[in-house]
Image (cartoon, rainbow, N blue to C red; front, top):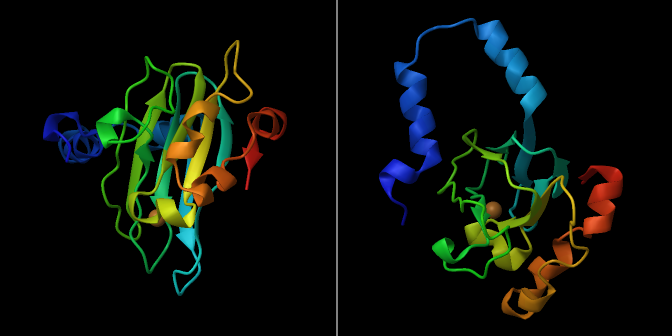
Length: 174
Ligand SMILES: [Cu+2]
C-alpha cells in the first residue's frame, strides 16, 4: 500500500535501532513538550471505537503520536487524501500519511508544519465513526473547510468530526 522508504513508521523503527544513545532524559523532555498523544481505544467487545482526543489544536512544527491502547483491536491513523484513495481533507500542500495497522501497544507519529485543518480516519473503523480532526494554528482557518466533500464520507464519520470553532476554543475535544 505504501512505498517502504516513504513510510515514516519504518523510518522511526530504523533510527531507533541504529541511533546513538544520547541523553535519554533530554530526548524525553523534548518529546513531552513537542509531542501530543492521541489514544486509539474502544470498548472491550469492539462495539465502539474512538480516537481520544478526537479534536486537537497544535502549533506548526508540533508532533502527534497515535498509540493503540486497545488490547483487542488493530487501528490505523490515515489521512483523508487521494494517496489513501480518499477525498482531500488536509491542507493541499501538506503531506499525506498512513500508519498502516498498529497492533496493541504500537504507535506512529507525524510532525505537522502547515497550518490548516487535518481530517483522518481509522481504515477498518471509518464506518463506525472512528475519525479525528487536528488543527494546526494559523491564519484563515475556515469554519467548514471540507463541507463540499461531506457527502462522500460515511455519515457516522461526518457526525464525529468536532466543529472547527470548538477545537479552536477548547484545544482538545474528547
Ligand atoms: Cu480503528
